[in-house]
Length: 217
Ligand code: URA
Ligand code: SF4
Image (cartoon, rainbow, N blue to C red; front, top):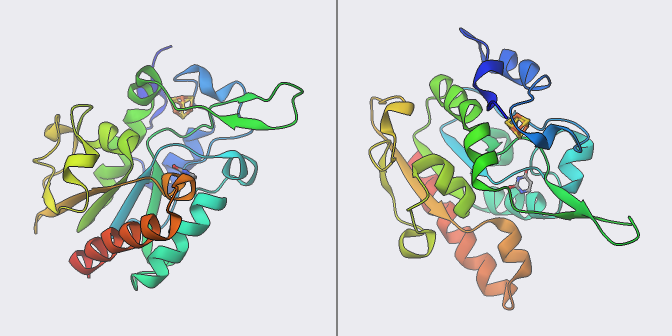
């Protein structure tokens, strides 16, 4: 597969990117998904959050973070005083990767592999060329890997405000911002939903988002 690069239009704004992404054939994931799920939010949002890939509900609705994990994220953003509407939400991979359950009753999420993450990354780079965030939040290891490189360990650095894009493995892919932006990694909201101690996991997740929201304010 060629990667998304040849499908990303030049001199595009966010709406142009959203439109063009419908035609992306940069990896095999477009084949089985319902539709591309690009992003929601304004180019001038101070807080940008990057997830892994759309889930089952997002794939049907065409909007990121509108399923169970998205509802949890939306609640935590509200509590952090940002509100979903003031943030820009996107994903490292723009099509849903899944397999069917044995009798085809359910679509079960599969993690995107490194090839798909790299293939889809030109969209993310194009988005960041237009965004002017104060804070970039990676939701989980896939997002952190796409943004700052696969060697980054969320468990070691979660909740810390780090320089952006200097923390990235390929900082040249992302614009230098003035004033400089910050990067914070936390867990994915679906990991909170799967946690044995959901309450504690939610509190820790919400606390990380509150740190990011405060830095973006
Ligand atoms: N999980 C993600 O990473 N992104 C979404 O859009 C929904 C769930
Ligand atoms: Fe293109 Fe990304 Fe979809 Fe693959 S996942 S087809 S690279 S938009």
